[in-house]
Length: 181
View 1 (cartoon, rainbow, N blue to C red):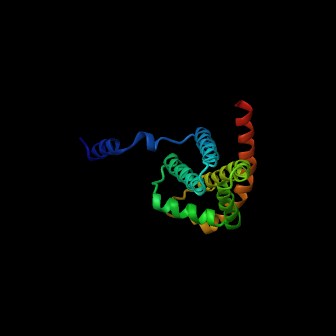
View 2: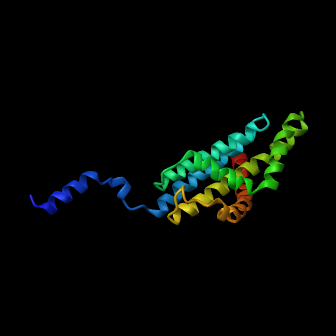
View 3: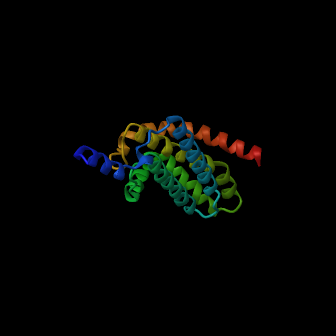
C-alpha cells in the first residue's frame, strides 16, 4: 500500500463524520431558537419560587445551562467557571436593574403584597435576561469565538440592547403560555 493511501486510511479512522459534517444554518437556527425558548420559559418559571434570592440563583443556573448547551451546539468546549464569570459580569452590567431585581426578590418576604408584585415582574426580568444571554453567546459563537475569548465588557452594550428586546420576547412567550393554558 502506498504511503498516500496509508495516510488517507489513517485520517478516515480519526475523522469524526458528525463533527466534520457541514452545519445546516437553518437547522441550527431552529435548534438554537428552541433551546433559547425553553430556557427562557424555565427562567420565567424559576421566578415563581417563593423563596427570596433562591429564585435569582435558580435563574442563573438556567442561564449557565443555556450557555453549556449553546457551547455544545457550536462545538465549543464549555468551562463552567468561565461561564459563571461571564454571567456575573454581564448581569453586573445591569446593576441598577439587578439591584431592583434583588429588591423585588426580597419583597417575597412580605406576605401577599410582595408575592403579588414579584409574580407580576420577575418572570419578565428573568426571561429577558435569559434571552439576552442566549443572543450574545449565539452572536459570539457565530463569529467563531469561544468561551475563553468572550469579552463581557465588549458585549455589555449588546447585552443591554438584547435585554430590552428580551422583555418583549418574554412578554410574548408569557402571553402565549397563558393563552394555551
